[in-house]
Image (tube, rainbow, N blue to C red; front, top):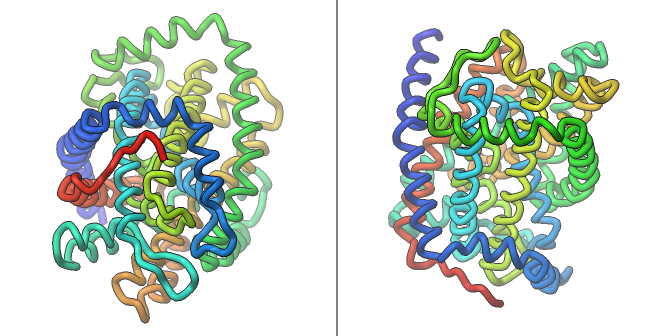
Length: 436
């Protein structure tokens, strides 16, 4: 087992230090230039685009309500990665990695738009008054065979069982509320299966109910913390900017970082948190009622913008409260320690936050994993995948978080490369209309 994870570490470094880092930056810059900063135009006109998408909603149409799908998109992005995994950007990569997270997210917006555009363009109607779409369908068009799409689907089946977020929710609830761990695992697993087996429509309904109040409360608390630490903000942002392109010295438990390390963690966590190029959004949003790919794809730009702001808020809380350089603690504990300096019962509050953020992401990826498994084998794929997911959730509930994150990182890097190769081959099919 030791040799296996050592190999995965080498592969992870190869993917994220060289291949994935280069390809996401190249693809993002290419589509940003080709579209003439299309993501900026979309964000500046978000109200108009929202109204246009709402006008396409019709209960008599096949598919899922486009605004509910917007929240399903957010559900896949706004997960525990925004609160926990993103902490590795500063605890390992240093404060400057936040700049790289912003850069990757900005150019990633146009990558996300492109994959969703193709996902809807190449979708197929199914027998359940909906659609099947996503990278596996346009990769088949791009490469002219099913080999690459099947490899993509196999990788996503591994990636789609969000064992890391399942583990964090389990640990947090068992510790915070002094509950039996087996009971927590069994209950959470039951809720996940009940929700995920309902497909994209049930996912969209759950996310549209849970996410709005969660986001509002979390943002209000963050604003309160920023006001309390207003005098620290100028020097903090200066430190973030300067350490993005230079080495950062050791402080407390922080061992120091280089610009390459900052870029590595900033880009990889932006991709992981925002599902940039991974294929989740392209699969889920292909179920939209709208007939126009650009309308639903535009909303994903704003969803990634919101996701990036949430990541930024979480990192700033940890930096402002000066808990980011505390040694020998789990990534999941940084945000709890940061909030506990200003609000009472932070452990209980974050347990609930972890559940909402993680639960929506877990069921979202499990829904997409089922679609990928069904693409591989229409008859048995979904059943086999559900059995695999159950075993994976239980098995990894008793293993170290770092091993789980390593597996996710390697799978994500591989998915990213395959997906972006497909996008580039079909680049001339992607349109960037400014008006409907």
